[in-house]
Length: 150
Image 1 (spheres, rainbow, N blue to C red):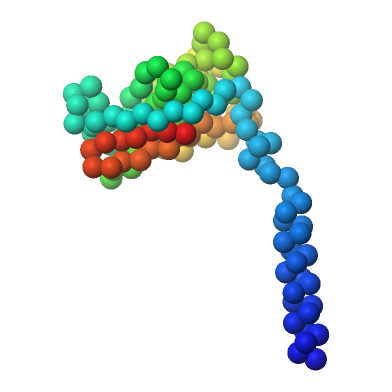
Image 2 (spheres, rainbow, N blue to C red; image 1 turned 135 degrees about the vertical axis):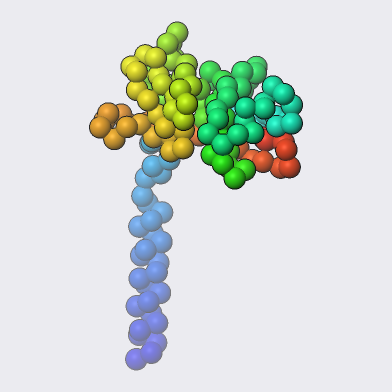
């Protein structure tokens, strides 16, 4: 009797693993088709005057450096040494002259369609019906050095 229960349990576990292995990888299917992906790693020293705005909660700053993001990167201080970094390209627009985001306080605005994205959350307004939020990058703080990468 115990052997039969154990056999059923093993069969159930194998079935669950098989079903989950056959499911589609949504990460690939939900990839943003508007903005190309470039690998990079870039470090900034928060003690430098150039980045002094990032020392205050709620401040954002563009990082424009060769090879950093597609249209640059926007770094935002969420508070308590918590930083986020996003691609500076409008996430729901093909690359064009108007597809670089503009910082507006705790938000960024896409000049192509005037859609505003909150930097705390990175998502489009729920009523907009847009599919893609801001494209996040890793932002890792080590002492006073903030490294942004993808």
